[in-house]
Image (cartoon, rainbow, N blue to C red):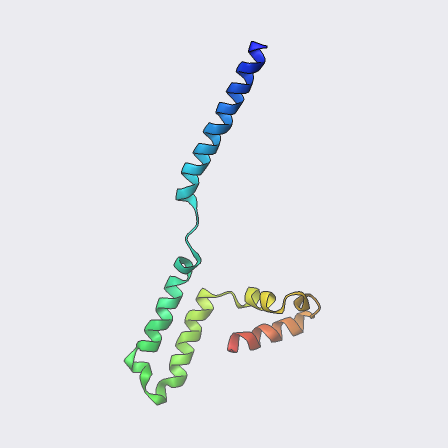
Length: 107
């Protein structure tokens, strides 16, 4: 009886210590927030938009090109396309998927 009680107490302590350790160490291992992940991309886009060299009407296409270049580095348009279309995406053939991603990227 006493041995079973000691065993239960020992197991309870092990579970508590493991849980506490997981809780303490998981805080430092948590991934950055989505905003933190997107921050470099968003900052780059804002910088391109606010850049006086791109502000003139004749540089509008150049500004759009710069913004899209930054967007391609920071966003996964293929995955976003899958999420936008949902179940419909599965019904598309490879050529249709590629075409949709291309159009979606240009938005």
